[in-house]
Picture 1: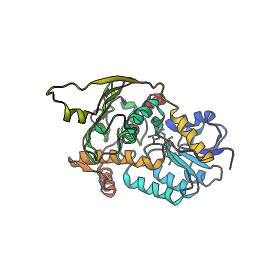
Picture 2: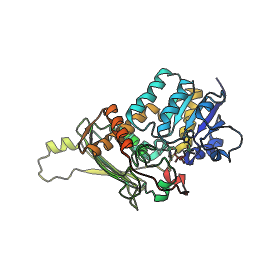
Picture 3: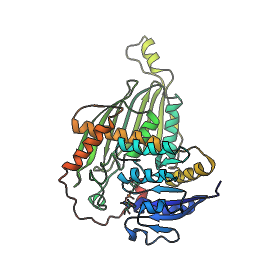
Length: 381
Ligand SMILES: NC(=O)c1ccc[n+]([C@@H]2O[C@H](COP(=O)([O-])OP(=O)(O)OC[C@H]3O[C@@H](n4cnc5c(N)ncnc54)[C@H](O)[C@@H]3O)[C@@H](O)[C@H]2O)c1
């Protein structure tokens, strides 16, 4: 067993350069190669070999693993190439733009199950979401009845959307807030509550920005046990909200403003409802403040976990296979908005791919001149 993982980072824009800078904090990991199709993006990096073509980096013999931080569509093609050439892969979110591409990427891993394949779902390291998940998965909250997530604090400016030619177009990014910002929230939603079986969504396309993709979404969800949900997001409102409310048979959990409050009922609500002789009763509850602080190790923790998984077989925090769920939910929301009807999951991946290709073919949108944007990566955590 090697004593360190030789890592290549592909795509050194905003996120990739953040990963490059964090390498010194990752134990048993050496950055031996970087790649970007725009050579000037790599000018500041000293030490690792530089490539302008991911295929050359992948075949260089210089790396054991790659971290892919390119625009979304390339996650699939570069990921498949890396896996088929014997490299471990950590890909940025979303793992692919649409479900059919997720399946192609996952199929490549199935051909090489000995390789580690992870996704950069860094918000899974946040202790708040870990605690919430524990309360739900342990049964403390009882059977899921309702979930509501208003996650509208993803405000983005015109300068942000103009900063990269690929951003906010069907051909370049494959979607808007659902594909760029919300993969984190949709992943957490399914990680905590499971995957919905039916989605109805109203999406607004370019409502607040000069873009062709969605920048506001309101979706109604149904879960297999009959539980319902609402998911609301926007990159156009300020100040935004991040409020996650989950209701189960043993009470209500609310996460907002950094606090997790669990109003825990003394007894099962369904049992109380069925057995109380009173017509207008109050269900006795205890107010519990669930302790959690900080935001966890975020990107560095996911990368360290990936290295430890390669060297020691440690369990992955975010196996990339699980990334198909957030993509499928996002795809279902867009398809529902396009058809103006509810969409059942599992989604028909071929139908969605065709619908997306139709958007690309039918696009008459021309992006305004690219502008240099000041991008603060910390704010996107
Ligand atoms: N996990 C997070 O918190 C987080 C935050 C921001 C962005 N991201 C993700 O990171 C990825 C990149 O986003 P970004 O904001 O850094 O974009 P960006 O445009 O700033 O950077 C992308 C870089 O990839 C390069 N590139 C494009 N095609 C390439 C190819 N085929 N091979 C090599 N390099 C290529 C571009 O030249 C550019 O430098 C996206 O998947 C995005 O969703 C994740």
